[in-house]
Amino acid sequence: MDRIFLSPPHMGGGEMAFIEEAFRNNFIAPLGANVTGFEDAIRMYTGANAALGVVSGTAAIHLALRVLGVGAGDRVATSSFTFIGSVTPIVFQGAEPIFIDSDRESWNLSPELLETCLKRDRPKAVIVTHLYGQLANIDAIAALCDHYGATLIEDAAESLGALSGKRQSGTIAPLGIYSFNGNKIITTSGGGMLVAHDPAAIKQAFFLATQARENTPYYEHKTIGYNYRMSNIVAGIGRGQMQVLADRIRRRREIFEYYKQALGDLPINFMPELSGTTGSRWLTTLTIEDRRIAPETVRLALENENIESRALWKPMHLQPVFVKAKSVIGGVSEALFERGVCLPSGTAMTDNDLARICAAFRKVFA
Image (cartoon, rainbow, N blue to C red; front, side, top):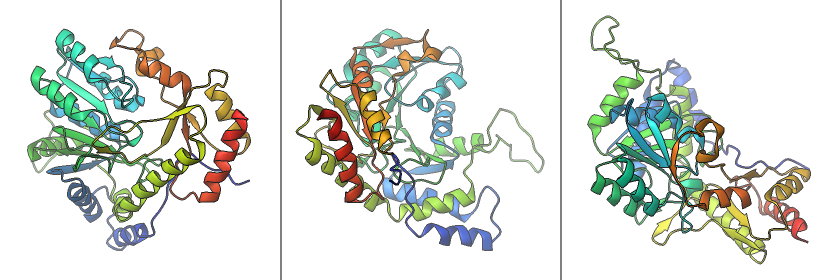
């Protein structure tokens, strides 16, 4: 049987035209028309005021923290239930991460626990991850940040195209980031984007992302910068992917509904979607409520059928590298990690593929 991957790249067909254009014009160097074209496409799609293409979502978060002046002695509150790339830039800056647990209503950062942290620790910034393409309670979180004087950064690496009302994830906070890693809803093979309300923030981030070179006819540097700008070839892939983004979101949501209809009678709970939001359903995720069946048993059963699945993220406050970090924990993310599974969600899957996955999944419960 052919392998079914968790979330493989899915090209739309238009990517090669942008890549070939770059070759014809010899813009193989880091910057060129594809980079600015991709930035413009993201800006117009999301409604962001300004955008900057970089090498990864992690680099975008790092730049956001630099723009905010986060450094040694500062505290940054952040989602515990997330991928480590969301939080390592805090450490890069010599700041202290404080991990905030999830709420049950969204599986994302809990506004109630965040307020406990804001009162107690007075963090300079807050990073909220929109997990698996589903939005956190962003309005409540933003209001708390405004009240306590912390700047909010949206980690929308997994949620490009998700909506809170009519507002795009990543654009509600002053700063937001997206990822175009190989498994994301659209991909450039590797890349990211920083977006902002204030174009001046993007101008500063651009300076830092291009080695912080001063405007002189020779190379002069008064501060430390990074080689973080996106490749013109990579950006060409992104421009082609933007042409099919709406189709990819529609198909991800169709895949979720297929699973829900096919497996909904089993003792499982799917990741919820907050009222007033429309997630991208980047990955279909669920928890297994029958305590006799371990998620690892499900993963191995699917693997035996040549189907890739994955455990939910192990919370950051449980990671050995962060054993000494502060946290505000209510037990939600630990329970989700203990009982959770991610199912294949690639948009190139057929309904026959989905039927095969569901049959293998149901065998475990039978």
